[in-house]
Image (cartoon, rainbow over all chains, first blue to last red; front, side, top):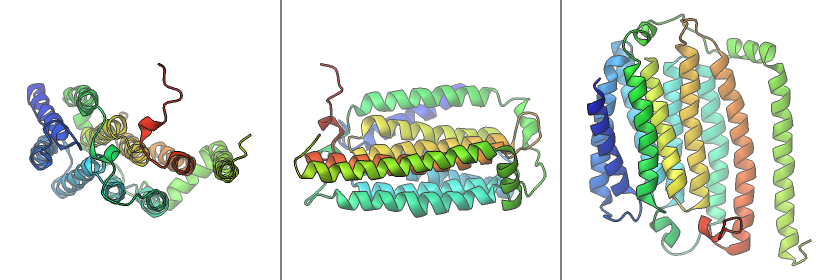
Length: 230
Length: 103
């Protein structure tokens, strides 16, 4: 894939994202979204010949598009609750991609932990911190949208061009399908409990520390409310 | 196939980065870090599934499981902090909290 085409597509995407940001200078969100969707679809179509056999290719394109559109709405939507709901869409698309890569257990864990546990916490906090009336000013206007979009798309352009260039010979051999059934519970569990036992122990300590920290932070709020901050 | 997955992961990560630096709502900034985690999970699993030497391993998936645990800890602590900050000032605007900012 020629890198000129890639740069044009990425520039289109960057312009579209800038227009779609809340409170951007031009502030025509819908046109920006259409431009972005077009650039995303063209990018996915350009990447498609690199992917595997036919059936898998369609699923990959579908899931990648859903994930990217969801991610877009996460960062451009003005209401945090809708951002959280679109993030669940991203998680579902990611889980689908993992299933395509035969990581079934990880896909299920991702759905349960992210969409089921972490996002529910987010939704609770959003509801706790809700304000009456429309979206507050800090949700209606992004901070330095131009600089942010340029930063992100320069990073994306460097990664994309390097990856597309390296695709030529060495990586095309990797499209061959290795053995199936790699990511089942038995395999992942065996690997986790034989080679990474120390990691599991340390993760337990980390979760305990996070729990103690969260409780400590919550208690500090109660003390501060009574006006006796020490 | 590897390159396609890596591109999707890179796009998710870049979108999360853009959201993190441009949005002003504390909750959405944390949500954008989770978005970057999603891109990284796709990358890790793709590298484990289509490795350069041709032998798929489970290391990427196991690493992603650890990443899930770290993300859960981060969400718990970060959201507790957000609630605390909201109780103090009654707003979720990140620019209200600039005690550590120079000038």
